[in-house]
Image (cartoon, rainbow, N blue to C red; front, side):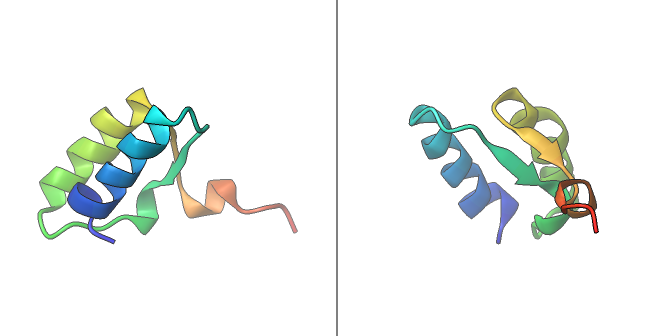
Length: 60
């Protein structure tokens, strides 16, 4: 999914609906790596927990 399109707009709508949010940063991709970095490191953390897939996976 494009981080600057689908993920950003979904996050904003879900936050407006008062959902508790988690973004899997390493599952996001954007055509511009700098846009992805800014969103996952600066914008998304204001409304969601931003973690990696490995950090979110249940222990085995």
